[in-house]
Length: 355
Ligand SMILES: *Cc1c(COP(=O)(O)O)cnc(C)c1O
Image (cartoon, rainbow, N blue to C red; front, side):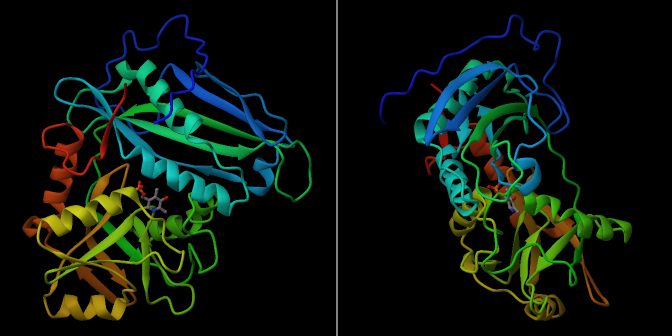
């Protein structure tokens, strides 16, 4: 590692933490004392600083608000059994952030700002990491274009920020899922593999329609045949068929390569399952359900970690599962939590100390 850039810090006059108990906070509603900010101007990153969390002042003409050059990340910090702060797989999130940046024709953010800045910010606000089971400090890096001009072209200027939100526990009830056959989230050659803001806005209508029908989320399918599964809402999806764990592959560029997905694949292999990354059609899923081979279905992502899927609605078919009998998904959830909270040895080097 190179020596960390020392980022100037303007501390808060008084912490908001006083009188706030970091227990059972809802996801994403409370923010810590400080945030990191950096500006990209004239081909260079400048004015990196950590300062009190506050609103921004932006011109209405700021390009990101119109044309959507905006990307983000989401990762978490935890405290181990000795109350030492750690971040889960930060480097993987850093790499993915810059993949998103490239796809959206935005500048990449150097490690001295993203990684060192994140470590310095979390270190400064480490008292905001809740020390209760299933709690964490959610870290939200983001970047958006800031040129003040009404014209469709990549901006010359950008803002990069990181802010923090204490949260947990994130209870995710077992989900009822609508297999979507009309609207699509991602196409081959599109931006599905990037954590680009527009992907989420674009998904909201179909999700709302599914909710009107009584479902919690949609299972996205391919744009041509509406046959091959992609993702479940904003989570990657796994199907356990016999002794195989199958998840859609990344080749077509329609799937967001989740860090939880990667971690879960490693843990599944450790549990003796065969992991397959490939195209998976609804016909194969239906056949496996009918033959009794489809054992478990679940989504994975940083916010909820592992979310059980108790029902799938596909055309006229309703696939219901007896989730009380499931073993793999609950075991994965427990294992991940134990590694993150320092109860289980981190043999994969996923936990990076905040020092
Ligand atoms: C963020 C995200 C995921 C999950 O990625 P993690 O790194 O596991 O949090 C999956 N799908 C979509 C569309 C996402 O935005």
